[in-house]
Length: 291
Ligand SMILES: [Zn+2]
Ligand SMILES: [Zn+2]
Ligand SMILES: [Zn+2]
Image (cartoon, rainbow, N blue to C red; front, side, top):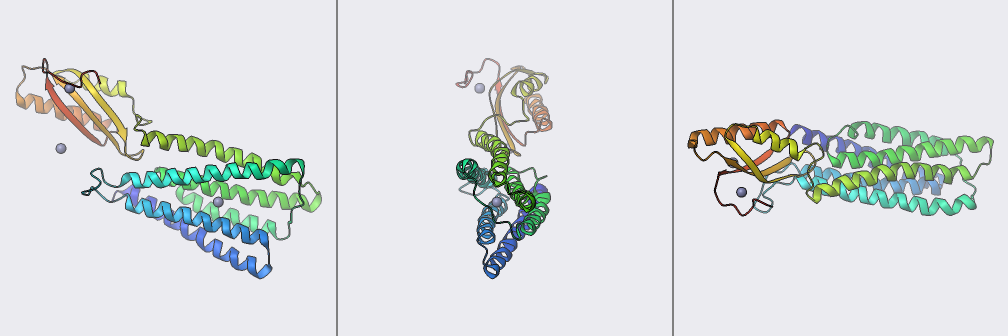
């Protein structure tokens, strides 16, 4: 298991326990005080902890190396969790819109007793978890950190609305702020969802430029040309390349192997973790020249 991988699952583990214990505490407080608002927040946070548990489980699984069934190892399991979690979060934000928009026209009274305290605790708990995961490189951590930020904004919403409501009965504020926050989260989460989908669709990794790689390879001595080059990423962090490299037909096997070695070195420096190079001699027939 790599270092980043280990950190990622540790961070998700912390985020899970914080969310899970908080949802239990909320449920207890909600039942004791007979508060529907606190109970529904408990349910929301319980749902969040399920999402985080799924992310954590898949992150742990993604550290497994190749098996008979998965020759590339399990890295994409983490990406799959990120895909589901960003999709669920996007759907949740769309739901917020549908609930909040009709209320703009007919604002309903909001019950604010004790909401400021709930808001502050929500912000604190989620901020601690957010700090753990938001620097993570994995898409799994990225998707969970947007989820936690959504909860932090939910806490800010509770706090602001209940404070304002102590002085003015500005009922529209609740829906208005919900829409603003949901727009912000949805915009960023959809962007993340697109980036994750592109990895599944085997697009060129974000930080890799195919032309530059090709130039690097061609600048190696004895290399005549390069074709059938493919670059894709397993999970946004681990990149794979395959290419056919045409070399001078008159060089020795030793020189050919050295050429391959220095190409691999250059590719590795360009951020590719796993390269497969097929060496061809100039003039050799190849079915993949134009693909
Ligand atoms: Zn949430
Ligand atoms: Zn090998
Ligand atoms: Zn070829």
